[in-house]
Length: 351
Image 1 (tube, rainbow, N blue to C red):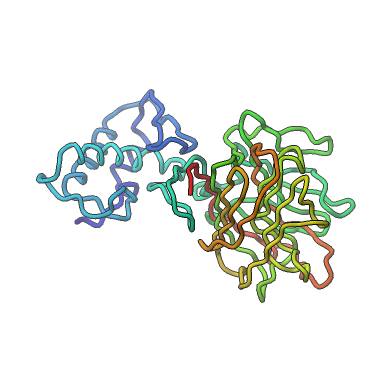
Image 2: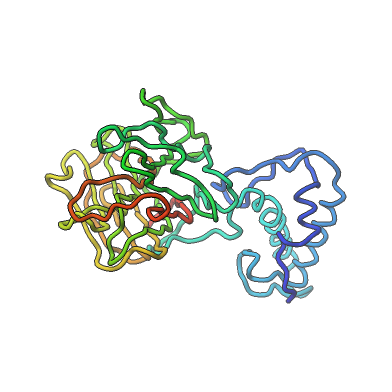
């Protein structure tokens, strides 16, 4: 089997750059975002690329191209329809999806069994800045301490991660995503609504997961980071804090917390603080939102399963790194406070 990656092949690369078509090339699976036209010029490079991909469909596609069924697909003895299907996948995955940094092979959630279809994601791999079609950086929204606010300069994308820092006590970081037809992420002192046309909000029957690096030591994250989902009408729509710092009896732990009309922090809170060191390395944090209960997974292990009492409306996606005045909590600023998010993914399905 040749050692070859479709997206690095010079002919395919040339096709991506110069081959043009009047149609929008759609991703291979429903839910992949940001499909884009590749233009309207000559087809000569595209024809070469298609031929190159077709040849590799016959002689074998390496596993690392991300195509399904990673074993060698052999030669002429294989079923022609199967090869044709792989050709179609290769054309889409090898040409269309790398333009947007989308996934070559659809991943599964880390932890739950069941059947899942990826409906929304952001991999941050090809972005040079925060994708404002997916996220609002919450510019000017007040922070928890008097005079503080969220600043877009503290929420960036580089090195294939979304990065959030606490620049100072007064200059903090938070990003939000919401469904395109709602656009209720807020920005500015007057809380004006911000359009996030390719954003998302988590609905009942869906699983959300992010891979995150929290700075800290001894299992305690610095500052007040969080990855959570929350409804527009709080607390009726509910809030699920999938992982949140500055929590627990110590005021320093990373914990799982739920808020609703009947379960409202800090009075009667559903809170779980898994034992372990969840800092200074990447970990996955995921949540399945059922109709009357939620399950939370850290590194694929179920760490919480609680009954919910919210109204089931879609919940926006949030990440933050902000200031907390908790006794004993390590407060750091700048690069040492940087929370790194490698990806965010949402699936529909069932356990």
